[in-house]
Image 1 (cartoon, rainbow, N blue to C red):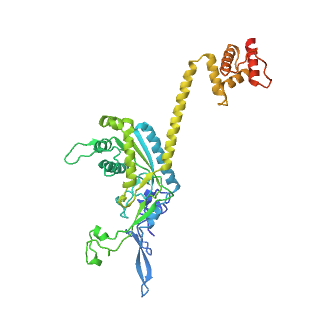
Image 2 (cartoon, helix red, strand yellow):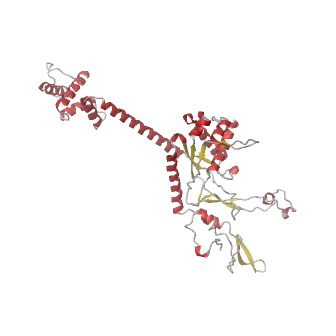
Image 3 (cartoon, rainbow, N blue to C red):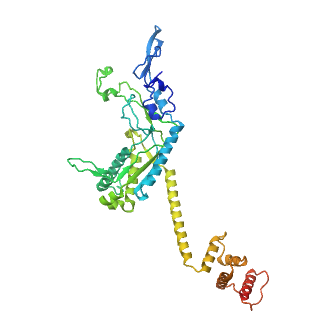
Length: 425
């Protein structure tokens, strides 16, 4: 049974450790002699089995490279809570550090497995990038910047159709410029890319397998089966290699921050009306479709697409924010208008604003208020005179000398009552 290279007092149960620790320090990879329990600093166990025609007991190697990955890939409840908490903290920090015109947040879903950090040193020969000290997968911001710079270059070349406004000047202003071709000048870009914490779909990472058929050629070793040849051929022995990936449908939230002061100084046209955001969104769309993020993108890993549901939520949130701002502005304007009104006008306006039936006509509402005795004194007289004016405008005012209408004519009866009340005052 393989063991981890840790002191005995740590025990052998590491299920509560993070995936990064189980893939690293607590990796149960190192083999033992299953009979003598002697520790072998190899990636296989030694067992004894009866085999062959003579049915003799032989030493048999049992490779341990796959089982440790199955152990390391699982996510426990604490891992998932930490993953969500890290993203929530990123969102809060991102919203606090800069204004909306200086930030861009874009949410995407992986449409293919994602992997990164394969070049990191590891006993399995294929590493993985875990964010310390949390031990969770992540995509470094430097990797995001590199992919988007390449996407911008491809768009600027014109070979992909519409450049969406990208050119060399915009690339230099946003991404900076490294010294090259004898040029010693280094320019800092205006953009800052944050690390990405994938929101992993399901409760585990996945294990992928690649099977190189010309390993002797890539490692420049002679192949005895092909006459000690080091040239590539299809008769070489394939060796399956396992490595960790983030499964498709996992969420990736990209945070980009722009230094508008720097951008105003170097390329003010990009800062105007948020043009830098438009350019970057086009670069993201190109990268999602054609480039991918992380490692092994040439064979389809790291492909992504914008999260349509998240985009719809963002658009709805923007509409809600705009509606809230409009309501606040209307309320402020309405309050300012109230301060400029006479006492009677303000009383009528506040009464109409408070009515339950917003579609009730003004005349009917004010008439009802007078009947209920809502106002008194001079205020009541002014409002009654205003009601009289409204009735005249609506051709509902009836002089006392007119022929008496039937009792069921409610408008006429209301007019008589109002006239009597006014004359009594």
